[in-house]
Amino acid sequence: MIKSIFAVGLLLVAGLTFDAAAQSRGLPDFTQIVDRHGASVVNISTTQARPAQPQGRGQPRVPPLDENNPFDDFLRRFIPPGPQGPQGPRDFESQSLGSGFIISQDGYVLTNSHVVDSADEITVKLNDKREFKARVIGADRRTDVALIKIEASGLQAVTLGDPSSLRVGEWVLAIGSPFGFENTVTAGIVSAKGRSLPQENFVPFLQTDVAINPGNSGGPLFNLKGEVVGINSQIYSRTGGFMGLSFAIPIDVAMDVQNQLRTTGRVSRGRIGVVIQEVTRELSDSFGLDRPRGALVNAVEKGGPADTAGVETGDIILKFNGKDVESSMDLPRIVAATRPGTRAGIQVWRKGASRDVTVSVGEIPDDRVAGVPTPPGPDKPAMAANRLGLVVSDLTQDKRRELAMKGGVVVDEVRGEPRGDIRPGDVIVSLTAKGVTTDLTSADQFNKVLAKLDKSATLTLQIRRGGINLFATIKGEPRG
Image 1 (cartoon, helix red, strand yellow):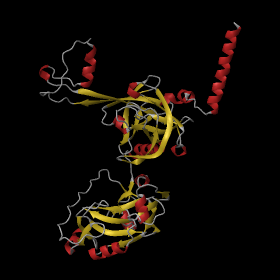
Image 2 (spheres, rainbow, N blue to C red; image 1 turned 135 degrees about the vertical axis):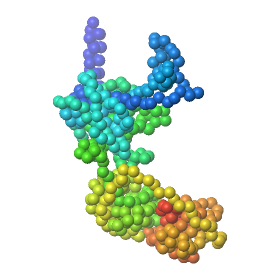
Image 3 (cartoon, rainbow, N blue to C red; image 1 turned 90 degrees about the vertical axis):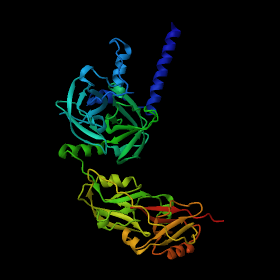
Image 4 (spheres, one colour; image 1 turned 45 degrees about the vertical axis):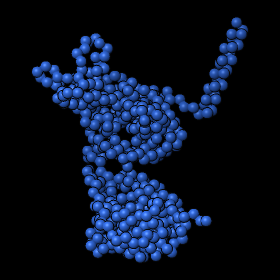
């Protein structure tokens, strides 16, 4: 009996020691967050009616199975129904699941645009099992944010936090309905901030390792204070399931979108009319910049806001409206978040020095159509290759008028192993080395400038290819 009591005492002491150690390590307790804010998270189910296609040869159809057959429900979920007697094929419904969270007591709910996209019917299920039909107030595909409304009052709304105060490594919590399992809680840490994803130019995503799966979309991401700091939106996966890379839309971005959707029904974004590229180490060296930063301007839309302000091709935009542009990915987000009509200051790096210009921000149209590049000019007579292995010739007067260019030289041939992204038909407009930019007017001038440069110097060529401008960096040869 004494031994048993002593063993229990040791266990209690060990337990107290473990709890104290856990607290000293700062291990989080998520229970209070779930208790206080779990009722603000909702399950969203949508239904979309899809017209059945005429049954043709080779198309799968549901075989006539008994109702009690365990495979009957499976087949009817994934294979459209076949013809039903003389009436022909029937319409069928496509269903999807997602999550959302209440942002006001009178029934406004935030979720992802892709959760409610093309839905004919939206059902919102609360934590207390009540269900409501919802209507879409507005949706923005560019940020994947949607605002929906249910007719209810006295609801428990979330508390909003500040995503900018999040630190990488900080604990965060997600609540949602992965695979339809309602009120599922998962946790992890902030893995990175300000992530840019392919085809996603307007959202500085929060990256986490919180387990997110289909059905979590649109659900909230909480910090340890119980404040919503993001909307869980995407995962990176090779299997379709969670692999440790989850991305959330910062709540400040989402709230700005929902404010516009609620007041005007659409989202207005700024634009200045430039094509940009990332500034690499080689580019920063050749332009005389202290380090790789900013957005290099490849092209300026003629008559656009940037053109009117005096921004030139070859400028590196370092600041916009007082905000630093550390990466080219920063500029679209900063400009888009600026209200059209705003007078914004731009700091550019041009020919080894910074300059300030002021632009009147335009507005991104709803639909943009990319221009089709024009084919390169006809072949020119061959000449001797320069030290870069390029055979170049002068632009004809007709070609200058066609391209609306005052100077430049045409690349007729690239000999030997290419040392940069330069192709026959390219028009080289300028050469930059050691912070000095030389506008090119003839093939002879270009070759002479090259000959005077040290072979170890890294240089950048501004190129006109079809209807666009770009920059090609050529590294210098190592000193022997």
